[in-house]
Length: 240
Ligand code: COA
Image (cartoon, rainbow, N blue to C red; front, top):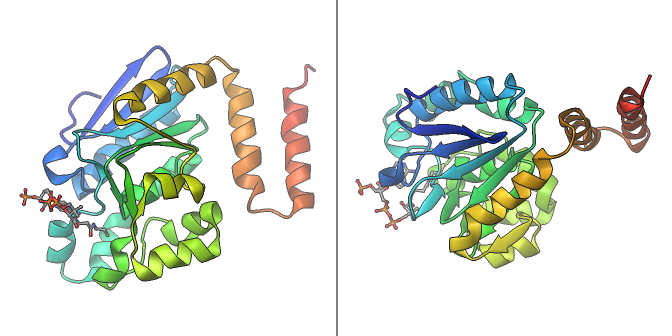
């Protein structure tokens, strides 16, 4: 798992660190990143030694400035560019991971960057973070779930405003919108995220996974079905 070029993967004391590593391109999401993330996340999903995952961006300026526009704009058509991005369903894979995923967000968090962050369970941002959905300016719509995940987190009106106007949101506003759980000084970002990861990883992996499933799957169900799901998952945790 060490032959990656645009992802760094490290495992330490039960925490899996996944770092987007193209700082000279503001960690723009390209096909190679898609392939490497797919490999790393697949391995993380099956690794019982990884209790919690931290997703972050390398360099000082960005978590991720969105899809790599040089690849995107050189594809034969936006439709093909979009299809290529879906050849490996990184987003589906992220959403199927049972361990808690925590996003450490700094600098630019745009397009695919915000979509990746929204596939995580908890988002901590530093004061310099800026969030935006620039797809309208490119004549496309989000392709990694953003049109569904953003309104589920911040509500229909705010999501549509971000999407339709392309307006960027700074960290404090992102906190008010509940797009992020917490905003911290830049120099404290990693340590705050690690403190949280250390707290989370101390709990039973199965209880964490069931709690995560109850919430994430339950949000797409009726209250009645959600309560049924909670009850079934809860029963599985009772001593037999
Ligand atoms: N795809 C490919 N390269 C990107 C990129 C992207 N999405 N975002 C930034 N880069 C590259 C720039 O081309 C530049 O490369 P260079 O040094 O070889 O010229 C480098 O990263 C630094 O970015 P730069 O534009 O010089 O920084 P800036 O501070 O002036 O502007 C942004 C930062 C984020 C405002 C600007 O880079 C931008 O608008 N990026 C595109 C955002 C976007 O539309 N993403 C797609 C969403 S679908």
